[in-house]
Each structure stands twice: as C-alpha cells, then as structure tokens.
Amino acid sequence: MTRYAVTFDEVAVSAQQDLFDIAPAANRPIIIHEIVITQSSDVSEAQEEWLHLRFVRGFATVGSGGTTMTPVPLSVVDSATGATCRINDTSKAVVGAGTTEVLRSDNFMIRSGYYYLPTPESRIIVTATSTRFVVQLNTTPTDALTMSGTLIFEEL
Image (cartoon, rainbow, N blue to C red; front, top):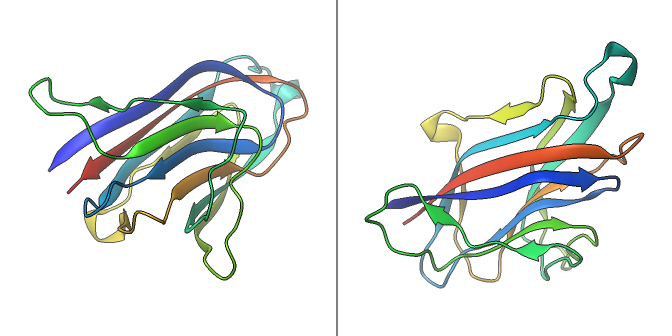
C-alpha cells in the first residue's frame, strides 16, 4: 500500500476545469486520502467569491487542455504508481451513459481554501480501470486565480 501526491503549483485558473483526474491501473484500486486546493492571488475582502467543487467517479473519457502529471511516492523507497493522472484539463472529462456518480458537492471561499480529509470509513475508493476519479471546478472564477492543489491517494 503506497501513497502518492499529485500536485499543481501556481496555475492561472480562469475557467471551469478538471483540477485532478486519476484513472487507476488494472487490478490496482486507489483510495483518496486528502485534497487541498488554495489560491494566492485574490486576498482582499472585496475579491471574495465562492467556488463550487464536485468529486465524480465514472467518466468514460479524459478531458483535455491540461497536463499529464507523474504522481510522486510519499516514501522514497516506494515504486512508481500504475495510475494515470492529469491536472488542470480545461475541457472536462466526457460523461459515459449512466456511469457518473457524484460523490461530493462542495463550495469553498477562495480566501480560506478547501481541505478534504475524510475519516477512514468515508474515503473514496475507485476500482475499475475504465473508471476515473475527477475533481471538477464547476464555477468560473470572476477573474483569473493563481491556484495550487494537492491530492494524496493510495494504490492498493
């Protein structure tokens, strides 16, 4: 059981997008342990806004416009993951017929950021290779935000 970090640093975000997209490798389920999303550009009270996030499992195809990201093992002695990870896809993943499950729908204030650290019994598990776990930003920011994020997952 190895844990990995998927990150994006100081990215200009001005549109709705898939912040994280993870597809497990065959016969290697993943468990989502933690998600942190912050921004550093709008820090005054006059710039406050709420953004909507959605955690979804089950997309048929991957989005585009972002980057493939190689997850980093949290321990230096662990091997590379078999999961495929993407960050900041500005064209969102395409929904397969009847395959999408919304697992969480949240809003967060941009000045305070977003922190998801579920109890062990509430952690999200993704098992099939044809299934993806996607963290979607479903609100268009009022102006471009400089955002960073971290997602920690475990591969079984």
